[in-house]
Amino acid sequence: MKIVFFGPPAVGKGTHAGLISKHYGIPKISTGEIFRDEIKAGTKLGREADKYIKKGHLVPDNIVIQILKNKLASEECRKGFILDGFPRTLVQAKELDKIENIQLVVNMVASRDTLMARMTNRWTCSRCGAIYNTLFAKPKKPGICDVCGGKLYQRDDQRPDVVSERLEVYEKQTKPVIKYYREKGILIDVDAEGEKDDVHKRILAAVEEYFKGKQ
Image (cartoon, rainbow, N blue to C red):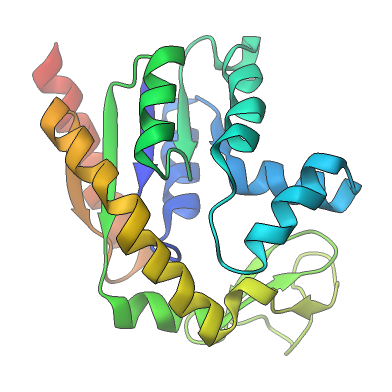
């Protein structure tokens, strides 16, 4: 299986891509996680990416593709993979076609109000990277990670003004990718509103139904 999880910021791509990854036993590849690793390590690539991420802008295609091409060629991805957060532009989608034959794109859909609430109330552990939300996934002790006891912080790209900018960027630059994949006949829409377990069941059912029809 070679699957792309698609949708706006805070729609739950990472969470649900991870659940589907575990279900099928194939790796989840997140460009966001790769970027954060590069930024934390202070590499040249990480510093360049950080300039764009802090402003809520997309990282340039040449930087993203440089990282991803090597990853997909690794032994880890030989039996398949789930891409989380890539492609985000039409150029990236077409470049990806040159590297891999994507079989399915899961397009997660939620309202703007839901996305704003999820994103602006999100907090991250400074030590282990665990994510919390003060609306529906609070830590047991305010400001402290349940997993490792690290201090929670809110990333620069999760402030309301930056979140709004990120959603605008998505509307302008990323939505054309939906049209591209829909015309290829490999995109399915899944309602991402509501409880996590309910959304997971919808996604799993949609994925199984899609591949069943391809057999």
